[in-house]
Image 1 (spheres, rainbow, N blue to C red):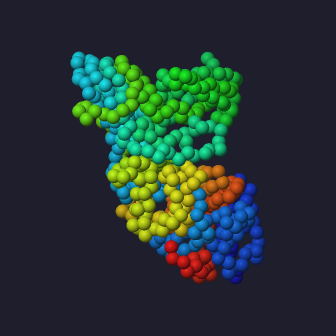
Image 2: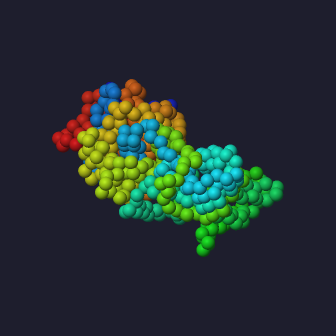
Image 3: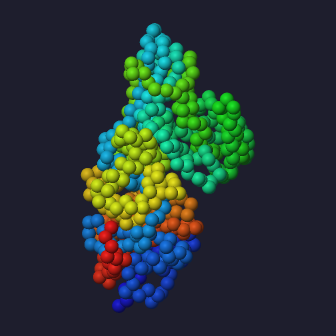
Length: 512
């Protein structure tokens, strides 16, 4: 009796899978081929390698490692020692390191000090904002905190608003990411900063109704004006956001006018997220706007500088714990939050001779990995988020890190942060209707010429596999189908028997 090919899909899921990840990519499937095309003696890893070559036309484009964690299975490796650009799966390294080094209960404080005194309803003195590197200091938390001033009866601050961003030291500057898109103001490009508030974003909306169109932003900052040129048309299907143009015009006085054009059917709305202001300006404008909305006037200007040692604490907002931050970072692949986390590792463990928290954070992670016995040769962390053309890691290194994470006291916290297959985060639309919903927790990566996955997936026998897969090729658009095929095969036909016995590692005497 002939053994079925490892990539032959069950009839109940074959059509839906092909109509999903694989058919969209235009990749031919082994499911459509005759059993005789595949010899029973061929190994799981060889079949994956052949499928990848057929899809990508490059025998070196795929690097992969798959290791069983808690049940039967045979380690599988393909080009596992090739240094590859990982994209956003590098966030798993940063977040796992933070959970063990900072601890899952780590918090960030943002403190409000004054060097003045309260006289009636007036604060006579400056208001200092001492930032603590919070990756997600939201508008809502700032509003709740500043509302306490109103509760104290303060209606006037007779002084300056002074922002203190001394928590981070970045003497070497931040590496630039050369994006090939046409939107330098996109949310994923926001850089980390001690002054970071509300992810430095403005949410613009335009809505059409019988009155015409109305445009607004949240938060509504005095430094940003909307020039709404969207015209309302008769009711009809709502157009995609790509049908609208958002053009910022920067003025000498540091104000920005955002001109939006397009046509919007009545009853529809369109939205855009943009990052338009320097961190210091955005945060000062946001705080002033919130205070103004509460009826509190600040008579002085906006400054940056250190908080005086004799200033007294008036208000404090404390972030959610690190576990919450890690979930946001990995579920939704937040670049700026991951980069902020790397800087925090540096700031909290900076040595006396270090003056750059990015470099210090990278050093801290390398030291931590090497203490675990992970070979970091050739690894390049760069910014901790994977938003880089320079970052590098091997699939074997990634799998070793996942093995340690599986046995970590904080493994549950890290696993809960990863997107669930076919259910949420960046995996919400992948591998639907193939019997794998929720049966894997996979972080994804996406850059030009890069597609990647890393995480844990469960097979039909409830064995959990650590898997790392990276596709580096030009173009890489077929890479997602190849990586989804790996996850599908690990679930439905895992390499567990002697007839599928020899992985690449079996013939590789090197120790890593």
